[in-house]
Length: 352
Image 1 (cartoon, rainbow, N blue to C red):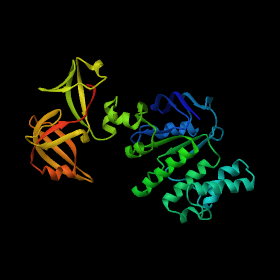
Image 2: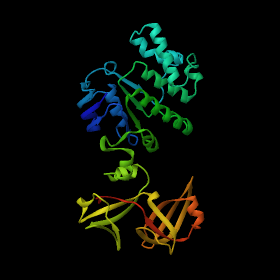
Image 3: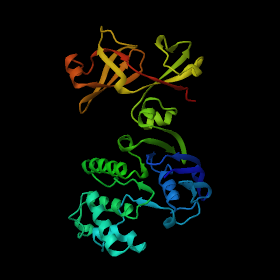
Image 4: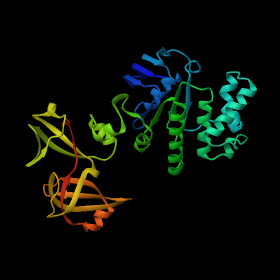
């Protein structure tokens, strides 16, 4: 089931919450809409579901124009952040709710509910009410309820936002497994970049109602087209530079120009360097693509790495992610004098 949005717009009062947005999602794809609170991502999801009217534009599900159809005629399943389970019904009755609406025969309905309880790994919990289930179990039931009528499209609005970190991680993996097993086309809305990276076939970055950029997690992280994307997805070091000929010039330093950047030749550019691409070694060592020497200003523990901030001699601050092995092997400490180099970097047109 493909999803096609053509210049979709939503207006509340005088504010355009979603602006002239076009997008194509392929059958079987898990597409993640990533954006901050108030960016318009949940509103867009509700428009696809038919829970919010479209002021302009068109929505097609499997080449069928559903723009003005009610939710029940769109073939869409919806999972909310707050579960929205009926507290007076058991888990099995919640799952069966949509099947009751469709007047499915009792035997077939019972079999379908049991299949879904097995799918979400809660086969013995069918008779429990929501209050007797954990948050993670309730969200699994909400997912099963959305899947019960066999929708063509699954929409998920911040489905793990109310759960703790460990449960969130487990449910993300389970969701991805179920989505791939069923081959269902899905859109998930989140503000969590880690969630987006783990789940998405592709990510769409949305800000102030505009779809800024679409790509795979690797594309958006390594080669973003927009500075907003680069800053929103992961940490970033920015250096002002100029692209000329086959080189990039940062002050008096010269670096090889990345491939496919000829269109930026002769222009001021912004040099994007991810912290894990920065090399920090004691002064006197040779490094690839040196940026200069400096002093370690700060070291912060970050699990298997340390987050090291270096102030270069020209005053520029660079953040690096340095492995614990290298920290100890090279005795990198606060106020150590070091040399900084880069393994990889990306160019963007100079920000105004």
